[in-house]
Length: 130
Image (cartoon, rainbow, N blue to C red; front, side, top):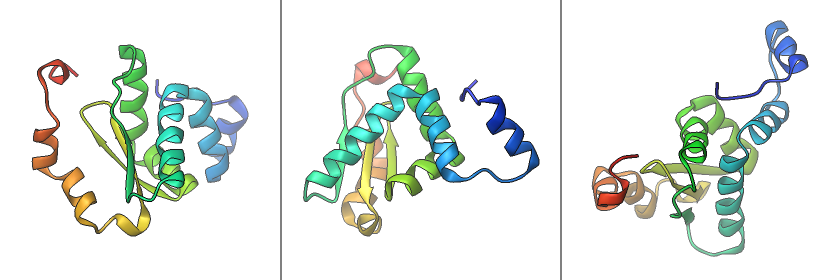
């Protein structure tokens, strides 16, 4: 299961829409490693001048890698995080998470990061099992 949804939140979802703040809080509490990585790259982006910041450190275990996969493979979760932080998230190799300034989404750096070439160049033997 991707998220540990509190009963009250599930009840509200069954009755209608849930706001982003409630959803993001559920993501934060359910996927703490993914939250830590994403908040880290967002903080790096906010303190730097580059169009993006990224995390290249592999997760310490498959459980943490699974959190990143669940967070970034879900359109709803990724979208909620992007709206919450005001960034565009990008993802490579089961662990390389990047946060882009929204103004950089049409930049060469963004296109390079999300390109097939970028994915291939980011491969290494130790990453092939992820």
